[in-house]
Image (spheres, rainbow over the protein chains, first blue to last red):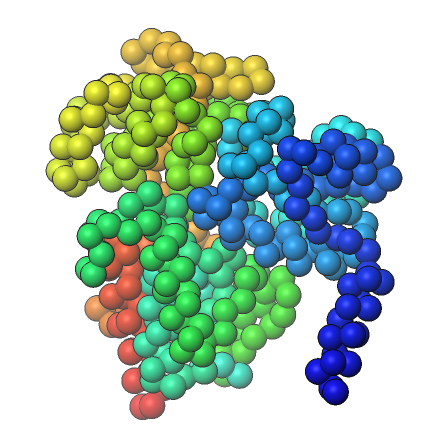
Amino acid sequence: MDELEKLRQDKMNNLMSPKVKIDVSDANFDNEVLEQSKKVPVVVDFWAPWCMPCLMLAPIMEKLAKEYNGKFILAKLNVDENMYNSQRFGISGIPAVKMFKDGNVVDEFVGALPEPSVREWLDKNL
Amino acid sequence: MYDIAIIGAGPAGFTAAIYARRYRLKTLIIGEIYGGMISEAHKVCNFPTYDSIKGYELTQKMLQQVQNLGAEVVPEVVEDITKDKVFTVKTNNAKYQAKKVIIAIGSKKRKLNVPGETELLGKGVSYCATCDAAFFNGKTVAVIGGSNSALTAALLLAEYANKVYLIYRKDNFFRAEPAWVEQVNANDKIEILFNTNVLEILGKEKVESVKTTNGLIEVNGVFVEIGSTPDVRFVEKLGLEHRDGYIVVDKFQKTNVDGIYAAGDATDNVLKQVITACAEGAVAASTAYKEMNK
């Protein structure tokens, strides 16, 4: 019974809380990033599974997305599977993180930064 | 209160934690980024047990082992270490107290410090060949440096690029293992330019060329692999004796400050490799344990 209750609670919490992290692809990038960024800033994390610094940055980005609780949406784009948007935004070094507002890139950084630096970058731009 | 706080989550810190946990010490590892510099290595072929293993696989295994043994690992940035009766380590997130401290912070990648390098970072300038090689499929790139990491970067890039210039300021690869030099020499895509210094990286939106002491070379990417430089933050804060920024230790990995040990690339050791970093981490933990029980 306790377990069922917990599952129900978790599900409710998921439904109630704003979506803070999504995976995007070439198919839905325009909608989920460019269009969406007209309502709320979208931070795109361009990454690949072979890139160790990307894997090291990922939990930091996710933690901050949760903590900022909807002030921005974290969108993860796997560059290995989504070449079109990687080329479109001139990606030649990852991890690359770009902030989109009103359909445009307003700021970016390259490389795995420690948490305080990412926080500073977010606060500067939000 | 921890028995040991280990600053740095690379091979030296991980091995120190493995030993510390088997001594049943309450152990904390604080690492800005897990894995250390070796994580970015394309192949590691000189670590016992593996003919060849990716750097990140090796360090992931170490991290897993450390966590299985019950060490706590936190992704935080150390801002200050103070010593009273015990040590207080202040991070961006919390304050931790520990009886002993092991510094295993490794070193930072050295930059070329030429015009264009910072401006074109992520636009063709890279410090991580394993991350970015795939973006240079069919293109021309330059690798700067002459150590093992430069040679392995060139070999990896040759799997993607049409042409790889390996640019080195000296006249031979005396610092690299002959095993890598042979492979580089045998690779038709790699052209070696000795006695050549890079003066500037040029390009508007993206890297277009490098200006060298031997003329202008058109490239789409520049991979900088010119070794490392010590991180001197703690040396200054704690008054640690050092040699050009590398912490001086004795054969027990003790520093000049009681209760502080150092291991791995951050020290003034003679060989900066995974295996030596691990060995030093083990010795540091062992010394700390013995001194705790004195």
